[in-house]
Amino acid sequence: MTALLTLWERDIVRFFRDKPRVIGGLVPPIVFWLLIGSGLGTALRVPGAPEGLSFLQYFYAGTLVLIVLFTSIFATISIIEDRREGFLQSVLVAPVSRLSIVLGKVLGSATVGLAQGLAFLLLAGPAGLHPGLEGYALAVAVLALASVGLTGLGFCIAWVLDSSQGFHSVMNLFLIPMWMLSGALFPASTAPRFLRAVIAVNPTAYAVTGLQRALLPSVVADGAASTGACLAILAAFAAIMIAASVFVASRRDAR
Image (cartoon, rainbow, N blue to C red; front, side, top):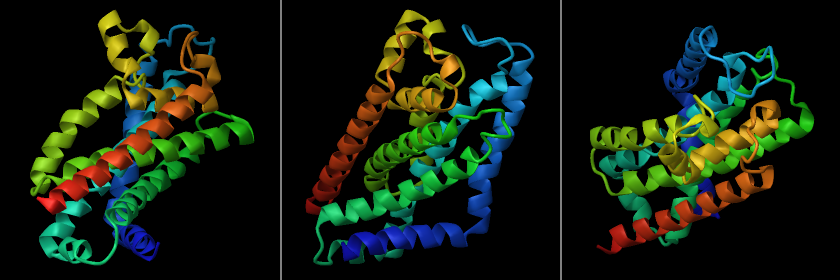
């Protein structure tokens, strides 16, 4: 626990001491939400949504997932930096388990992503969304599980790479399609059949659906995953990614 908490605290302190990183992680998605939501809002109407619902409100859940997705995964780039600076090698030779190291790094980066998501969640009221206490609690649970799972994915990739430039290239290959095929921009029910199959196995799609059920249930299409299913799938995704991270860390160390 000491090693886990130390690594977790180190990532949190490093993040909040870097003011440009804090601003850069939150302000661009807000601008993106306002520009895309306002621009498309005059040209698009969400299928099946009640009259008076703006695309800006529909796009809110997708923007939340975008913030958590990018912040959580790109926070794991610190693994490459720690290896380059020699800190990671010192941790690996310490008498602590690989599970403690993985959990410390994953939970630290996931907390950073969750913090950014919660900051944006404060804009739900000004955006015209009033889910109530239960809705906010569900949204926090969805964001927390999604942060852990996505950070685990970033950990697996960052651990085997030695270049931050390579990490950015590889992660963009995953991030953009994962987010675009999550229901953030358009409902899954309106997508072609082959895309619906991809969306069905995309874990971020259940994060978007879970947030929509929490914040704006009127836009959730009939037949979409239930609240319990979204939470269960996100929890399973988080557990699988942590297990994969432990496996990758142990294998890399042994090799």
